[in-house]
Image 1 (cartoon, rainbow, N blue to C red):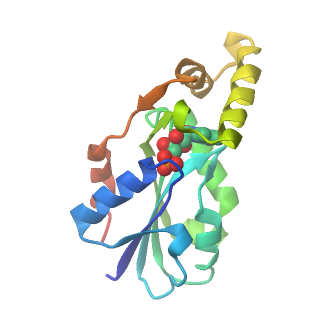
Image 2: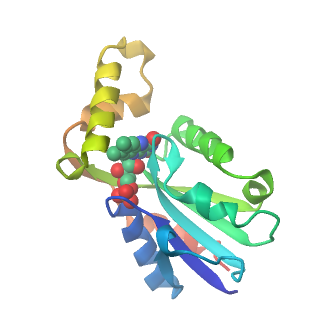
Image 3: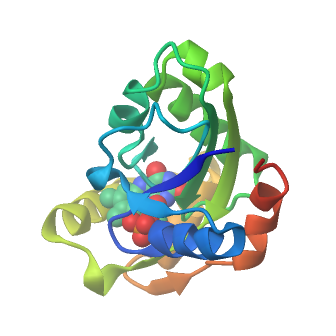
Length: 175
Ligand SMILES: Cc1cc2nc3c(=O)[nH]c(=O)nc-3n(C[C@H](O)[C@H](O)[C@H](O)COP(=O)(O)O)c2cc1C
């Protein structure tokens, strides 16, 4: 199958997963910003960082796939614990809003865990995280989700949850 790995990455964790998968599968990988034509491929594997629920670059890239039969695999990379079903259900619901129904129905979806280094964030992202942190800190603890608690716990720190073994589940479904 003619395949391509595309990544949408701001700080490198989604790119690192995409590069590793590219090495394992011997499939080329490229940033979404450099993709012009994807209709020539039979299978697209998209690995993108989560930003406020959205997958970086996904919507614009997959818009090109409307009414095609390209097989698509989507892997999100975020801070939230991917073993928590509430977290992964939320991510899936937000992906559904970013894609046409036919493209969504043709897609297999996976969740990988990334990392964050607050000292490396750009001004806009630092400000967004600061506002989010302060809004969460003002809520009663019993109203916080596990994702909220994780965000409070890791705020202003450097954490790295990248685990290349988690790519095995994707390796198994690539044709
Ligand atoms: C502004 C901002 C918003 C984020 N929103 C989410 C989110 O909604 N869900 C999540 O799990 N992680 C979220 N994260 C964490 C990133 O998804 C995580 O750092 C990921 O590893 C980034 O991928 P990248 O290094 O390839 O850019 C957010 C990070 C920033 C800076």
